[in-house]
Length: 393
Image: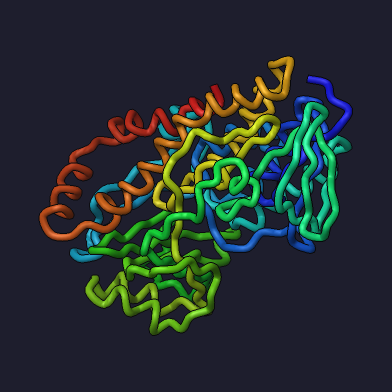
């Protein structure tokens, strides 16, 4: 699909950089417009299923991505009330052979750095900071992205990869602000030697309790452990990255077992986020403008698939544009390939919080009975739709 103008990408996060790389792999030039004054990524750890590694290979960064990952042995679900294991999923050779790639955890900044270096090294990708896309105009010749500083940037099309509070989405869908879940997440990173010794597992571990859960796993070559704890406190407004004392964090976990509570006491420099998502929509397009990643389908963290879905979007976007004669038909093809899969994950992420992570009493007992009964083969069968490469078909 030849064009004499670049594809404009609003947002220089993981989704935006992945889109630029995917387009470049198909010989399509792009200009990434990032509102911050420097390109970077906040936050700590994220989990990467095999579908993320499928994307890395398609983006041309497979070797670099594998080099900075920590490969865990299991996904482990613990009962935060009874202090025992409910179930686990073995991520060893059988898992890797089934899905063609491993499961890993990485520091978000390290992943962003791999994508950023690849973008900087590619002649078809331009990167611009202090370029906040606030709106757009379009006609038969292309799209004009309007910037907060009063400037205008011209391109063949515009991809809104500008996150949960996307300005591009506001114009494409007009569906208002995100939905506030009432769940609050607190994050900390601690040196490995400060993690209780009997919990230094090579696993992505989740302690499930009534209206709360705790996640921990090793990061950065086992130098640190990532801690993410969440509870229902009916928070009414969005918050992102606010520093909070440990006493506030502990308040939501006084009812769970002592061993799980001890993890929180070791955390320092806690920051909070009030979780938000949106209802699924299929209006991702407006002519030569399309949404990608959290701008299109923001989801709660409970399936650990936000970054993975953004990268899948990027690969499918570039593939769809490379197989069509017009931008509009290529963007429509992209949307049609992605909307059902991402809708499934948006809704499943909500359901996981209610029915797996946070139930109490008989509801929790039913969860335990169902999940304990599953064999390893049954777990792999249940995950085929997610990890088996279907998202890139």
